[in-house]
View 1 (cartoon, helix red, strand yellow):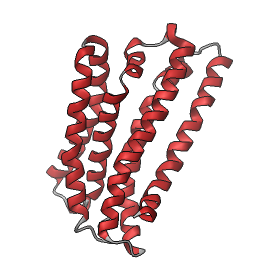
View 2 (cartoon, rainbow, N blue to C red):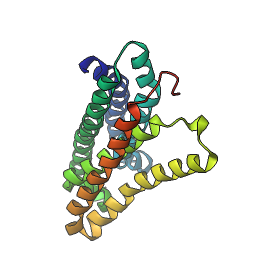
View 3 (cartoon, rainbow, N blue to C red):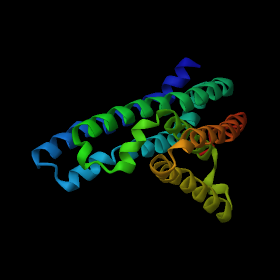
Length: 212
């Protein structure tokens, strides 16, 4: 299982690493341009990139790399264990990097920070619940054979992922206006990730090399 987990994780780690390297570049551009509103806007919204990466990497891990792993002789049991590990490791990693970048930005530019965004750094555990939901939902999406789905189900799946991504906006608003509800909200999001994870593991029982 460890080899399969590494096979799924490696492309995701490369993509997350490349995104992380963009942060010091944006930071230098902000200093060089005297806090240009363009670069500063990208800087304070940098956390969104990690959420985008979670979605892309999770879907790619199942739709692209899981069939390859099976073709190399990986058992479905190992693949399911690797998918479960992926669902924990990538959100944790992105959460840590997200908090690190956000804390640096807040310390250096607190006066200019949008307070909705600055408030996010105060709630790491609810943020983890959101990232768990996002990762598990995109893993499930990766198990779907879109070419074989009716148009209504394709639209429904896409709309569901849009709703999942929109929870970040809800999270931002709650953290600013109803902070006492944020921990409960994060717990709810974390619990909502469980059905998606269960569906993903169930579908991987019957996953085939020709799934994509």
